[in-house]
Length: 132
Image 1 (tube, one colour):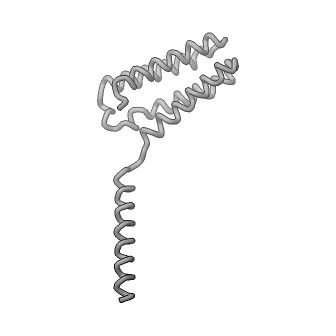
Image 2 (tube, helix red, strand yellow; image 1 turned 90 degrees about the horizontal axis):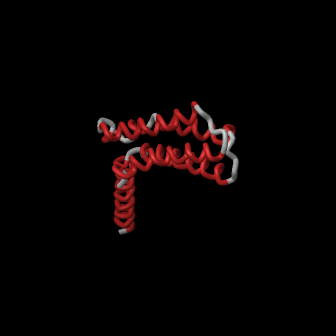
Image 3 (cartoon, one colour; image 1 turned 180 degrees about the vertical axis):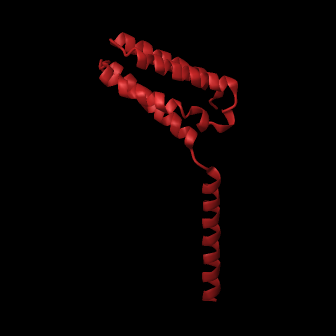
């Protein structure tokens, strides 16, 4: 009797573990979420710097550089949308806004605010059409 109970408990634990593993495998990587999270954190860091009146290139520049580098991963992160011309256009507009900001670093908080506004507009355009 004891053997039967132990066998049934082992069978139940094995079945539960199998279901958990299969679910984890089916979820796959969250590359798209990771890319958007990194970009959002850098946007927030730039916003915090702007609000703290720390608008020098040394304060904003590193955030812009990382944002620009991560923007290269937008299309690969969203594999199903990779071939959508509108999605590619939005991603390109974000990269262009970041490139423009890196070419002409902000000389004042007003300039940094304009840069952040341009980046926000580029993000919002895509989020308006593709965020669920």
